Length: 415
Image (tube, rainbow, N blue to C red; front, side):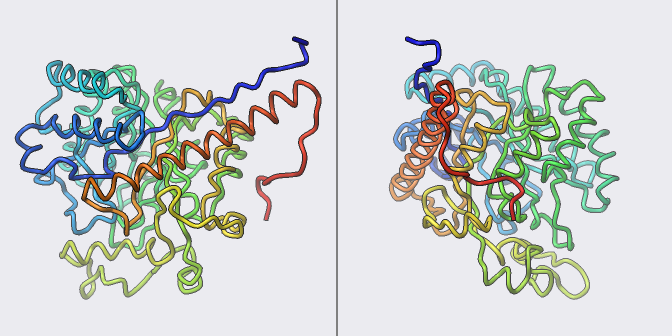
């Protein structure tokens, strides 16, 4: 074979699914009595829907959480029950189930506000996160995914100082266990009834870089990475290709280390009414001159988001080229191409985690939900394989032979 000829060797990514996709796969009565049964049953369910990996969801038990279920937009799942610390016996049981099903772990996930203002609540969340770290180490996965959060009573610069004081110690604990902490960038606008939009300070590339520089100063730069979710970029009027290009231009193309595969479909009528700040008044989350004490009322704070958009389960939204060009829905093919073209990643070692938060399809019935998730997983795999094939053909096979690529394609920063 001529040296100018390079073989066709596409690199697909690894498909996973967040177990919060079906919170009550195992009935609460059974799982509370036998905590690891929920993991065993989710591993079997993941095999059924065609996902070779799971992102194992941990959360404070409903009896101990500080946010009532009625106030949540996307309820969490404590598939990994850590009311009691994880131990080698429990780890052995889970590993046996992984061997039996052939399904592995992409990582563990605990999504909560790590900078919450109340000292006692924050300590409880940090102690729980350490339990998640310990479980990750025992299960021999190398990463945990979560949020940074925000102290709502402080402005952004003060939150940077709080991050340095409160969050960096968590990263030092991750480093001691040889773990990476992957941060998801959702701005979490509905976390408070206050008129705050960015309630997770790690919401965009500018903040990621600022936070990473703090981490580097304390020797934990390698522990701070981003678990990128394009739905949140669409929510904030950004596009994936430009964000990836910006990271590359700034020398931070290494920061993204995993992906949530979840879309967002912008409601043009909602944007016309409220703009990208979402519904700013008369939401129903206030009673008189103060935030309402009723959890169901507090859920109306999410109108900052849901008045202008709705989550997409990959594959469930119509193919809409105009929406892609307007950054009002995720162009999944270009998303996967841009990741390969602009980020410092080995695609074969990166996880694509399907996250199901499409409200009409959030069905807590295994038999009804299984074909929906199977279809989304199949779509995710197919669109990534198409991107892998295009990238390998154009950037490796043709490039090695000096054959030009046709056309222009999507361009970063173009308006």
